Image (tube, rainbow, N blue to C red; front, top):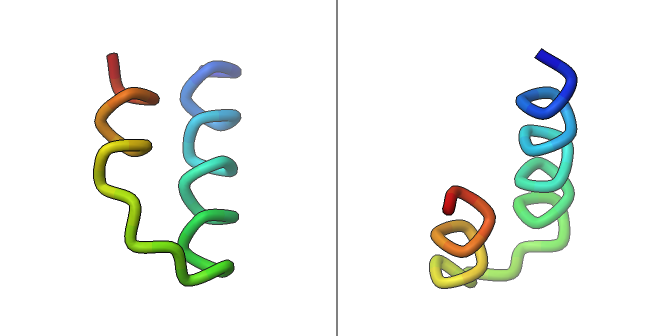
Amino acid sequence: AGRLLALAAGIWHNWLLGTPNKRSLIAYDH
């Protein structure tokens, strides 16, 4: 669960910044 929370937090930060980096999201997922 900790990993999921950390991952979600990272994605949320990216969304807040407004950086349309889908590659980053995919890299994080993998």
